[in-house]
Image (cartoon, rainbow, N blue to C red; front, side):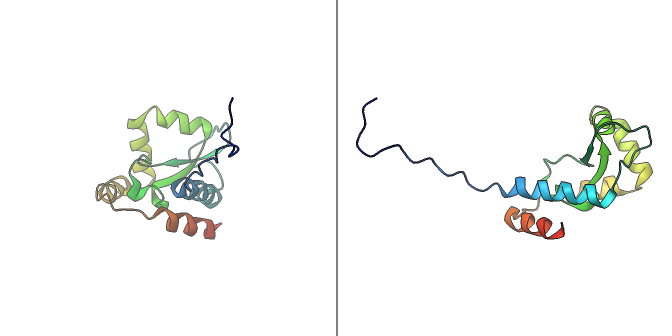
Length: 123
């Protein structure tokens, strides 16, 4: 390959993904807060951060009330059974589903750099 005399082109630096950093720190905090799967036994698999409402609603993505800890078995079970998930959440925390829904639909902007810094400090 002919060289232009300038060496290899510089790699473009990826922008910092603050939302990913916030997600990672938040998930660690949730698992530490709960300490174990919050669903009834039997449990299987490692602990995971499970969101009450999907992470696509950015306004509540890292809200502590929008997440709980589940083992991998229960996380998969409830992910594929949204009606059972809704019932489980309402039984465990009456009213939380609708409260979070209202907050989610406000579509408030999240400053992910600040959010990442906040959750990192909590660890």
